[in-house]
Length: 372
Image 1: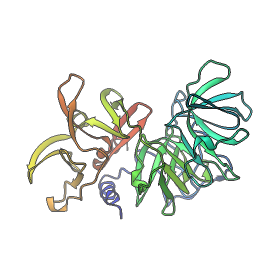
Image 2: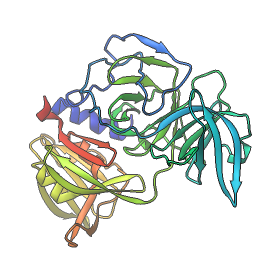
Image 3: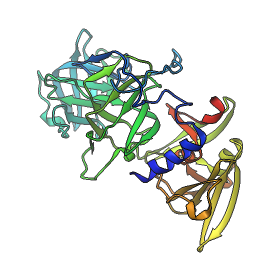
Image 4: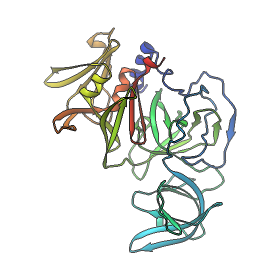
């Protein structure tokens, strides 16, 4: 069993929080109506679902929620190369001509084999499925950055581009709530998980909040949130730049957070104390350890090491679970006023039973037990 799963199971057993925060997929719930699709919805279309998952309704997203991308099936009219700047002039099904701007960040893959494709291999007359940015120019035809392009569509459904906003481990697998809370995408034991353009070995544990992925699935369940079990998942490269996020707690308190290299960091003390946790520090074995605790247990993190561990309040030190990586080691950096603070992985708060959710640039961390 995956180590992070063992810890999560221990937390959920003591807090009963796994199902209190969101309608996560459940193995024991009778399936709802299912639909077989031959075309994948874009990130802004109606959701789809998993035939073996829970249909408990969750709160509908606000109508003003902005999709992460728009998906179109289109025919390539021309491949334009101007001094190395490549664009595709396309005509979407039932739409007006459009120019897709291709960059080195555009994901291009064969829909049948999930193998990366070179843009030079796309030809005039090809039918593609593209996910493009919400922003378009007012030119004629309109121009927009291409996020992902799928070639060799075949007869089966094309891959779905998803943005994970919340994660819930399920054994060695994971359920990811994506796209403004509209769909749970779930991995299974036979799901093939690969990275894009690298030979790195990846698993479901490598799916991160805020790091998009492509998922292939045919069977869907029409619930809300929708649910689907992926046959294949391609984890896409993280944004190597750094961008600022807003952490909102109790719909009121706003704290500066940030994402770098695909990992979300928050100021440890400010976030923990706002959540009502007790912050401590000790030295052990020559290492500095920051502790965050409540009545249920304690989260320990080693300064300078990507090592976070959880110990239930009823257990002794010897019963502490093995430390797990969450993508970033606790580190010191300036906050708003320029004074240095300790930053930590936002997702590590899950060890204390909190739900971590990222929607566009807004991050939330909430105590699942308080929402029951």
